[in-house]
Length: 222
Length: 222
DNA sequence: CTGGATCCAACGCTGGATCCAC
DNA sequence: GTGGATCCAGCGTTGGATCCAG
Image 1 (cartoon, chains in turn yellow, orange, brown, red):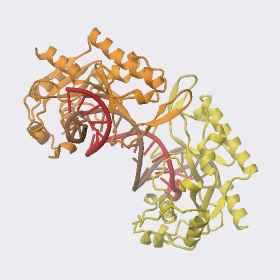
Image 2: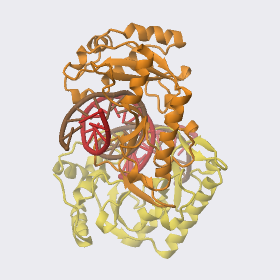
Image 3: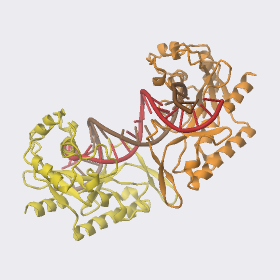
Image 4: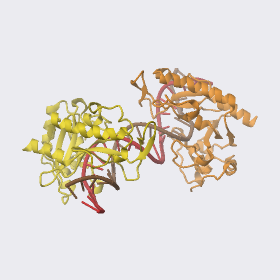
């Protein structure tokens, strides 16, 4: 079952509304995709199923999920309390090429310019296939949110550019956090180290903190 | 069956001499590796079998096949006439990073600094498994050969750096040729295009022309 | 509840080259 | 014979994220 890309925002939202209340297992059945029962082996599966159901461009590299609409899809795991259960992955931290990139030209900005948030139930005692999708909502950062993101981004960029990559840890940032992003802790990649030099370090990614996405949920649902 | 890396040049040459006269199918049997009967699907297999038999470092990335000896292995398909039947792949053309690389610092130079050439029968009507390995010989470029290679390399580098990548075609070069290197013709990669700009173009590789490797054969075997 | 560690699939890139139309 | 097109395996990277120790 392949779904064509949505022609416009209205079509995308119609499809997204049709997901609200659906169990992950039911969507997997419709799309004829098997889902592992091991939680460690089914990370990301709910998001990939949603991509297929909504007609996201398959295998798009460094492009929005809905290319012609300029919209990125993110599932957002929500605990029983109503708060996000996990941080949200944004993109890889480009250690090699951060130097000549202003925030407005960054992958972070491009990814977050327009996001379709799709909440999903995330009580860890409930098996993935039993969890329900929620009501999706479109979001673009407000001027205030943009300034917070920009400040966090620039603090990270400044450290990387000046060769202090080991200071770029998870405790940085109000909204935008940096954490390891790799298959395991032994992975290594190159980062700048002073003029012309390089050091090996762990690959990292940008993430949105739960406090930030929680505020978006609150604004959307009151 | 795993073979340990050769401890020194003498051990490498002893192993290489043991390959002379051996059929590809026989070596595959000893190494317990299946070989496709479709010639299009068995490109490169004779070389990979030789690597395993001689104890080349497995999966070495951008390093010589015999790391501690600084020696690269290349099989050389030889027609009944005694001339090379194909050009020899050297390395990828690094479109992004050619700018600050002199010939002596280039991947081409590093790959060709010291090569163990392993001739192999290449009458196309003979199935791969029936073809025989020949007598291997060590080679390093003579001063004259180095100058030819350098001139070809610099001509290519000059075009790439000045943003004229579309002029970098197979008709360039006396010894060192540039040809497409990709899974298919639709592959695209980025190349410089004037100051700060980029253009999409096909990935390319450096190859040695048959006339060049033919001269090496003639020198080695008279 | 924070932040380091980890999991899978898909795709790209590299290294091994030869195929084959003109 | 030239030179553009192509084939496979192995491994790295990215994009989808969540797991889980302290």
